[in-house]
Length: 267
Image (cartoon, rainbow, N blue to C red; front, side, top):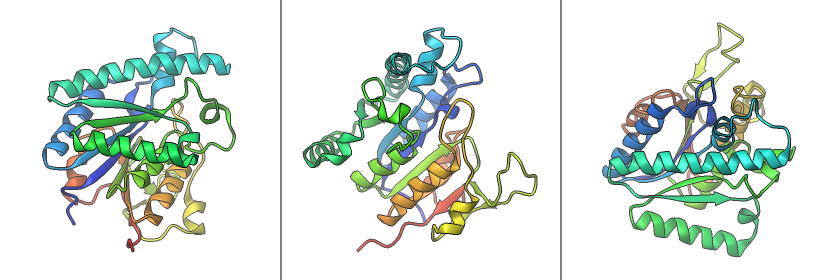
């Protein structure tokens, strides 16, 4: 099945956008901009959900490590978000694309009036051929940084919420792992990649691990929860390795990539 002429949400995580020193991976930013621009040129509508603000802000502020104080985390988020959008605007601009920044709080999804305005904003941007770039508004909201019961969870759940909000056809979560395994591949040499999952149930959750990479905070469980939300609303989800953004071409061509969580039939 080919995913063409679709509305696609792509989520990219901190570990994909930064290196071990916490600096921006410029080649990844540029490759991502080029591929997503090309995908839009094929007649698709594209929304990018991007992490990385705090990690990049920490490096740009020359902090010795990720701060524990909320105020410094929020300051890092503000600095890093500015850097991220500068890079996205620069690289997408190479391909004659206009991008827009949308920063969300949990309250934006709860308040019906805000949610309706948000849907209208997304629709207006997409109608104009503009690529929305979405992140959590960490510089003013503490819930996603500090709360034990995060609504979004390192943008995995945020990407699913955005996909549902915009009635997307496909959600692609670019991770630092090739897909969903029956065991943690970092701990077991016999771990097997599961290429297709029709139903997410209790047994599926048992296979999900805990925390993610050192620079990010989202593990496989948050990605599974995101897939659970999206597939329940009829949106298929693919989790695959974002090391090479060119994998998105295979996704759009319907090739077997990473793990496909099949969306339930829509009414």
